Image 1 (spheres, one colour):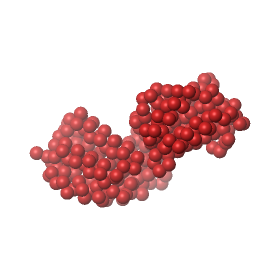
Image 2 (cartoon, one colour):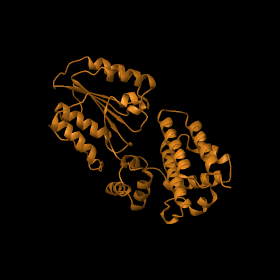
Image 3 (cartoon, helix red, strand yellow):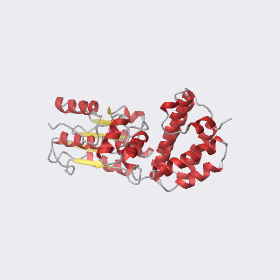
Image 4 (tube, one colour):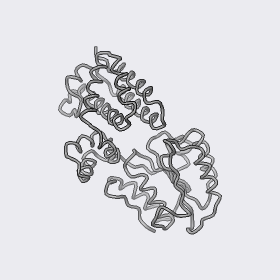
Length: 312
């Protein structure tokens, strides 16, 4: 049976690939797998390669292979109904069938409930492979899958990948710090004017340190319709939060983006409070991925951050 490999752009997943290839070598195939980890680190590529290996095929187009994806940033119940109908068919050419559900974390509640029923009654000749970027799937769905975790890459490895894509060193360095270990995420932000976004983040941070509510509305409106800039802005806020923790511990030399004078003006955070704000940013991303109103979810987040960071 073919071994699963990832392209050069997706490194650092040796543990996940080892588990996948052990499954193939032993031919002990479960009825459902969940490839879990951040976006842009190779989960979908690995899932497709795993499916091809299970079916003994070389292409992604085959009568025994079904690939389901989000429609308009949501996996709707119609896709799960299509899956249920497909499951009633016998293998056409291969000895089994494989169905992929990419970005399963985007399932609507109705779709997740319908998928659970599919998982509770597995078909003997079908393997389901889910991919998800976040720990937002219902536990009842997760518990019925064999979970294979994909890990974020170290920043220096992301930087090396970006340099091999021909990116300038300064830009590669900055994007690697904003990517949260995801080369794909870094490449998605490559077209953003980072200097302008950093300037916007600094102005926002200074405004909330003075208790200025207008900076919240102005920032949210300015980023309302630009997905790439908004994602870069949220990534910068995460670095700023981390830098705030470092400043509070006197580790100024390790700060990456937040100017020291801005750190001096904002309230000091403990680890628990910073963790709450990191989670709030994550929830904002999830809401945006599900087509929530970008203005409203930003305003909610920025007021939450302002309350925690307003200087004395």
